[in-house]
View 1: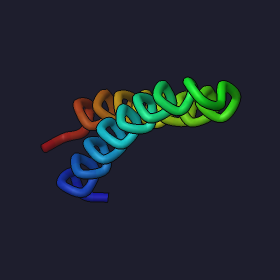
View 2: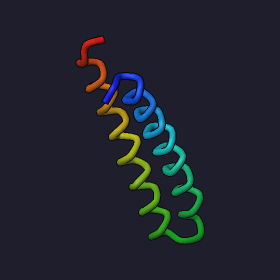
View 3: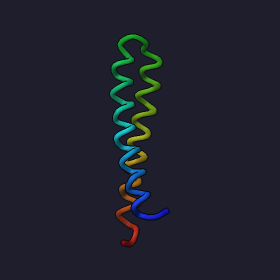
Length: 61
């Protein structure tokens, strides 16, 4: 995978995960279980993006 493709994936994971996390908070007002599930998936996705930032930082240009 090229560095440019990895950087695109990183930002999609981070922003998509944060969006899902916020969506889970709003859904949690109506359905607590489903809201937690969506929020958890979002948090894991954003964390995966953050881990890939560290991976990208260690790769050569």
